[in-house]
Image (tube, rainbow, N blue to C red; front, top):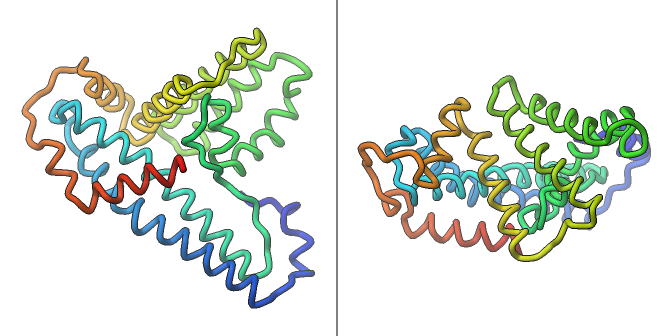
Length: 253
């Protein structure tokens, strides 16, 4: 999300050079590679798994589907952002960065400082602060409204609203813990954050809320398995495994 204030000076005063064009082409190619080589490959795997009835997946297959989608959506979005930033640079515009290694976050609050930063900034400046932010009124109400609207912004489906509320609940919990001086950061909080994010993406990617809850239940073995058709190896050939390893390494490295 690029606002007029980000680019208005460059509209009439753009500066072009071979060096900037070269850097823009490199950034564009990097983003296209993330999209084609990683996101598309992992997207095919997650699409096949989510196309199944959740009861037909083993626990391992359900986790593979959830992890592949979590990586796919990151490399999709960040790849598109890199491509846009690269094209902008070629044309003489400097667009703001949009992703900053969100999967290294140690809490959900930090995740939203790193994930889709232009969207977070938009809601901060046009919704959160005008309502009073953290200085006037009820900050918990303000944050709750922001994340409800964040879910609605993604589309007309209850799964998006549940996803927004899911993240909003943990934002509120962390805000309360921070006010009490009890919000800690360590490897365990990274695991907690990663789990919350992955479960949120399962709901985000599901056709409806019932499917999302059933898929999550299958991930933890709560929902009983039906007639399972395929094992993990059916979905993970050597090339996919290679891309999965690269995706994990690049997303946290």
